[in-house]
Image 1 (spheres, rainbow, N blue to C red):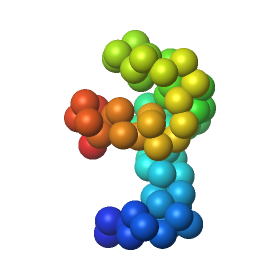
Image 2 (image 1 turned 90 degrees about the horizontal axis):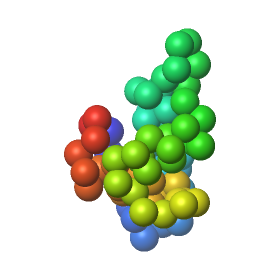
Image 3 (image 1 turned 45 degrees about the vertical axis):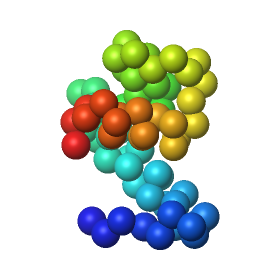
Image 4 (image 1 turned 90 degrees about the vertical axis):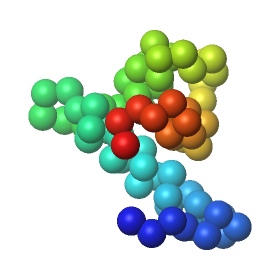
Length: 69
């Protein structure tokens, strides 16, 4: 996967959307991907302080803490 140009807003949004989708499938529940709320709950169990994180905050938390990928 090629890293997006983070100065381009559309590219950055696409990157975070794809990462959320990848994490949703990684943390799937039975045969369906996890919802954003389920990913948030898991991140809070792992130490995320935000109650309502954005996609970028959630993905950055997962990457900084080396969760999964």
